[in-house]
Length: 447
Image (tube, rainbow, N blue to C red; front, side):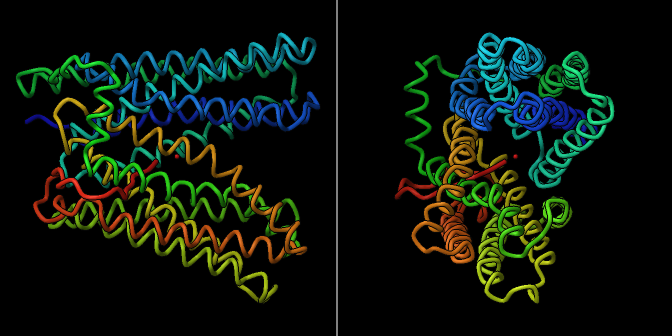
């Protein structure tokens, strides 16, 4: 059977980089322009980003479409085209809103809907293509490569766009965003060109087409699979715990430890450095350990969740200790644990996507992607709302943050417990298998 080599994995990683390049401009740069330069309420970009996340619920439908068609490339290209156009229209809408807020925000709503649809369609099919065409021993390194390349897309685009956006003007915003969108789409097109055709030529046949059941029936089939259900629940719980910390860590550092805005931003960079290290650590060690590959990924997933829970409990205690607590090392270790569990879970997802009925890989991957998107959309809201509520009830910012961090830590322990029930037969036999149908429990992930 033909499979993707390292060059093929890097080529598909370029698609993820391109996807990240467009998304980072729309969710961070345009967010800032709306709030600062246009003086709009922060709720406006918040709702638009939430719309982008909400439309990720369509991922199972996009996966079903690629299952029925039997090819993933058209969905990747179509999704990236939609994303690129949506990103450009979002910048145009933001510039327009400076003079005509009503029409500008109406166009922004359409643009962010296109962004959500594009990310869902391209991202789901890209992961399925990777999962089906990467050999088991390369899944962990492949997951690491693709996600590190996505983060690199964030970093490079933010740096270059920031340089060319100064001095700011609406026209410059549209030009820079449009240029990024065009380059990203062109890179994606070149990256996927001929990949699926070459793989099909190597196997002597094309991808199997899904039985043409209605989408609802296909989704019900996948949900009836115990392993798919378990993984879905695991993804939701772990990513809810992961995302709930995002919006409260820097305010916690400022209110409880007295860090300045610059120092708290540096703290976020320290955490992201840890995430990268955790990802690389899993990619190297799980790829090197060719024996018991599935078990290695499973162990990293469980261990990463447990370590994330311990790190959050440590942060809950940190405020009570005060300035003597090593805050920066604690946040760095939290990042390492987060990166390790997330990339291991993505590797497990790639292994498990074929566990179950044939030609349902797209629906399965889409279900897990939708679970992650819902968790991300809910996590930020739940985390910040919980802090506000606890401050009201307990009358102390320190106690409020400690309580919420502790809850997030317990959620990670729960996720670790769920992960122990995922992939048991895969670990024993070295290939994804469908477990006999016991109870719910479950997970997988990606950012």
